[in-house]
Image 1 (tube, rainbow, N blue to C red):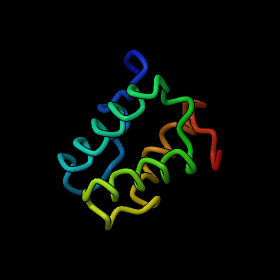
Image 2 (cartoon, helix red, strand yellow):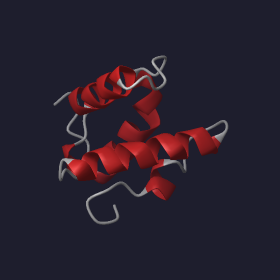
Image 3 (cartoon, helix red, strand yellow):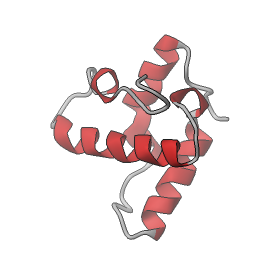
Length: 86
């Protein structure tokens, strides 16, 4: 983690497929967390659902689902940062 945001490089290290869109999504998520003064340690499924709902309301990628964040949550679980469904 860098500051209160996400360390995008480590979160994307295990992602297969094109990494650029995923990195852009993680940067947006990081800025969203920072705006609420939250760190990656607060991130879990509920918070990601809130993030996705706000993105959808703003007209951005309504096709994203919680499963899109599985690599990130797995990475956070590995470092003890994921709060699971809370």
